[in-house]
Structures are given as structure tokens and as C-alpha cells.
Image (cartoon, rainbow, N blue to C red; front, side, top):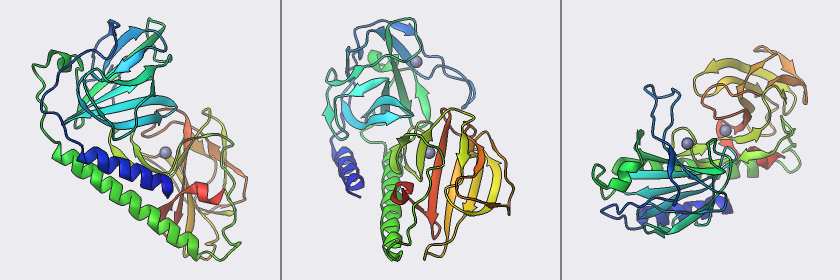
Length: 317
Ligand SMILES: [Zn+2]
Ligand SMILES: [Zn+2]
């Protein structure tokens, strides 16, 4: 809750910070562009949704225009900094952030340090993406300053962000209340379904595909595709199926532990070896880690719902 409060405070500061009226574009690095903007024809198609600057690890990355830092952290294992310039958002990766969310930056302010890892023909490349709403733009237009007009405020984006923050606060508060209702000692610990590091925690995050703030209603456990997924506790398979966002998805219902319902959810799997209605044992292999649905790499998204409300799985480990 303390983390959520801090993040929320930072966000409020970001929303309240003044937004510049005009871009004064400058390249984020002294390197040259080694890969240009090549957006996909289809929204989910292959393509290059930004430009790559060839450089070297450790080079300072600078804001190309004035704005507010709206994200500084890790997405799917990659360091990312996002600077919001009015109605536009610049995304930089892979970068070790040297700024905090909510910081106001000028054109040329240092925002991070370049890390290796982006595929390109140089020792390290900075990938710079530019978005207006859901639309990808050529970041180099920001440098020309000619074709991109910055609105003072993206009202729709701000409303979406505020709604996301409200959803996270509501989920967090509900989780606190429900967990408080559990009799002492009844909140039995869950088994981690994959013995792996949590690469994305429960709570508000900058969505790696939608590039906006959303509630992340579970934790991501990063593991190779094909790694067995184990049932977090004894239960009954309530649902097994495919959908566009969660990919292959499994829901297991468990003994309610004093709440009215307690289920665990498993998303993005390659597949599952169990059927609806089947009883499963704690620790039983029920499927295999995959990257189906809206996913940027092999991982298990693991969620817990208490009385129908998303709850942080980490509360049960
Ligand atoms: Zn790139
Ligand atoms: Zn997830």
C-alpha cells in the first residue's frame, strides 16, 4: 500500500505539472540513426515502431523536448523511461533511468543511461518511440518541430490515467479489507506456480503493449516457454480456454478461506493439460508457460481473486 501511495502521489504530481506548449526538439543521443521508423500496416503486425540511435553502453540519454517523466522503471525486463510532452509520449529503451516519475524535464535534460540489448548494428542502440494516443509517429518529426503540434493537455489520456488510478486504489483497498477479514492463520500460503522471479508486480503499471497506465491485476513470473505451471493450491478447474488478451487461460477455484470465493488465474500459457471440472492438487503440473495473447515474451501472469476482486498474489506467499 505504501508503494501504491507513493506511485499515486508521483502521478498526481505528474498530472499537475505544467506542460510545455512547444517542442524544441534535439536528439536524445549524439549517435546517428541506424534504423528508421517503419510502422506496421496492421496494429499487431511486425515493424519498427520507432527509431534506433547507434551509440555505446553508458551514454547519457537526454529528453528530446520538454515534458514530464511519466514512467521510469522496468517493463518485461527492460529499462524504460517515458516522457510525456503534452499530447505526445516519448518512450526510450533500454535505459537505466536517472529520473523519477513526476520530474519535469527540459529539452536536453539527462533522463537515463543507455544499456546494451536492443538488437542493432552498434555496441548499444537507443530505441525511441513516439506516440499520440494509440498512434505511433516518427520520432524524428519531433526534432523537425514542424509537423507535430503539441496540445496543452491530452484530456482523454489524462481521464484514462485517472480512471486507472481509481481502479488500482479500489482494488488495493478491497484487498486490504478482504485480507483483514480472513481469520488469523486461515490465509494459507499459496505455492508459487512457477519458481521464477516476479518481473512485474501487482498494481498500476505502464502497459507494455497499450502504452498507457492500467491496473496490472496479478504478477508476472518470467520463465522459459515450456516450463511447467503448478497449481497454487488444491482446487477445481473452473475455466480453461483461449481469449485474445489472456491467451490460454486457466482459472482454479479453491477453498474460500473465510471469504466467499478464492480463485487463482494463469494466463498466456502454451496450453494446459487439465479440463474444466477436474480436481487438481497443490503443486500438480497443470500446463506450460507460453506467450499467447497480449504478451511480450515467455511468462506466466498469475492472478488471485478474492470475492471477485483482484488481490495481490504476493500477499499469499
Ligand atoms: Zn528499435
Ligand atoms: Zn501480467
